[in-house]
Image (cartoon, rainbow over all chains, first blue to last red; front, side, top):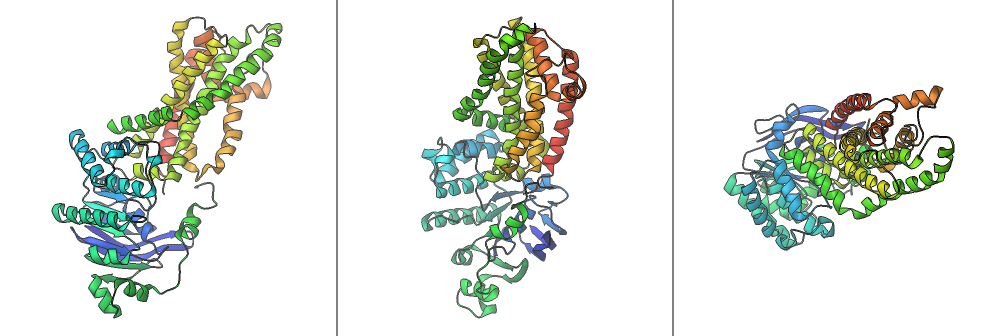
Length: 261
Length: 248
């Protein structure tokens, strides 16, 4: 469903993604793990047509996001790492806006918005402006929005960041259900190892832009002779604390530069 | 079509919800109208220019439109910083449609702002020669709005953050406004300043408004319409090109 071949992305002299290749099968829940600044978000941005790669080829289903971004965009949904809601619109309007952009027919749209808002327990607040929401509420709304158009592939970039265990569980159960019932392929990143352990069919670990290990959670543990995925992760990527992405890649890209070109 | 509509609707909703912005943006034109209108009025009269408020009002209406329009275009930078731009850019709609929806939305908002300033100027003593001429004037208002929203979009596509905003205000918006003949007649000018006025797109907008509202013209409404329309098309093309190249 997702095919990545020799993908490289450079920002100036910094190599954010370094010649990675892997594929994700249809209906798979695929965990993409790595320390901060490892290249996770950059990879997702390339897959979702927001960035152009320096080298390499990718395929989403039958489409090529590089040559034919418009068709590729129909096939996926994404929940971004950082906020992407319009604060000046209400919860309902944010959902409605999304539904119209993705051409979900009106009747289905309204049913699904109601169902999803009830599911993330924001139905009572549907007419409130998003700027009055807490961080967790915004997160829930974004997840609901990402599910609105029932994409074939769902990208989740640290979807459960800042959510309490109850909400995390609730949301993962829903995603697993969707995955089972509708064969939706799920590609997610997270820093919660037990979460990846529990939900991912397969896991790839990326570090310094390179894939350092890939396989089921059991395989990774066996390969590193460790008891938990967290230990396996640490054994593969080392214990050194990384720079935050904001001071690293993001900073180099958007930082002090005022002009984009 | 529905994409363009929902983007247009979003701009309008945002506008009507930010009352502080509406009221705030009325302060400046009001001040210009009163301070300049009544301040220079007697001198203008003595120089046999006629009623200065009458002459000034179309210029001030144009001013309020270009400020609001450029600002609407530049809002893309905000959307980029608050992350909402990503949501629109990954959606399966063409960037051209996104750009068109946003631009028409921004232009509608700016036109509304122009209408409000028009109404205020009526209270301040502005008397259009024929009140029905507000309709052709509206076309000019919308054209000015469209042109400057497209310009704002083009600029915003090139900028990373709001730090460049002051630069744009001082080196693009202010010169365009002050050199457009919004405050003084182009007729009497000579040399460089006259040349600059004739290449300032806003000069044609102001002239179009004057021709329709007070029946005074330098270029003439027909010429104004052609020039404004042509520049708007060019800027829309440049704006859509730059917008389509945005990477996040």
